[in-house]
Image (tube, rainbow, N blue to C red; front, side, top):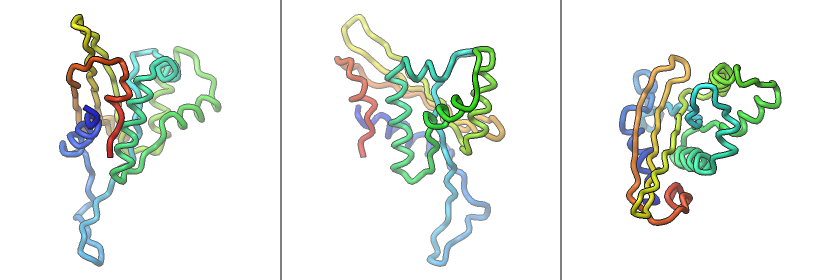
Amino acid sequence: MRNKITIIVVSLLLQGFLLQAVGNPATKSGEVVTVRPSIMVIPYTKTGQDLRTVLEEDPIMRLSISAIKEAFDYRGFTTIDFVARLKSQMESKAITSDEQTDFRTELIQNSGADIYIECEILVNKMSSGGNNLILKLQAVDVYTGNSIANKNCESGIFYTEDYEVILTFKK
């Protein structure tokens, strides 16, 4: 179960989410050069929902964003720290609830990321006493807004509320 994030990331990568350099130019050693896009992991938010509030009030979301970013970092991708970008932009601009959608779009477009991964976590507390997590990921091209890949991944049933155990990225 600890490798759930790893499985999700690998699944996304295998779904054609990597961009390759035009013509696959080779280096002097004959290796094919692959261009790796820069990636930013963001939380899923409902219309009008405040990004900062989602992060502050949902520790599971913070853990999942951190674990997914760490998995991309481990595989050599350039990642953009969403939390740092959010704080920076929040300091430079006063945001009202009516401006949340525009703020989110502006944050993504000004992030420098080529792709953003929207992450949603659903926690199912079962009557049997067990719990289950569903992680929904959607990779989106920042410039076109086109969905590149989607992946829903469900953990098994576990009898703990220590979600960090499930979301921890194992190398």
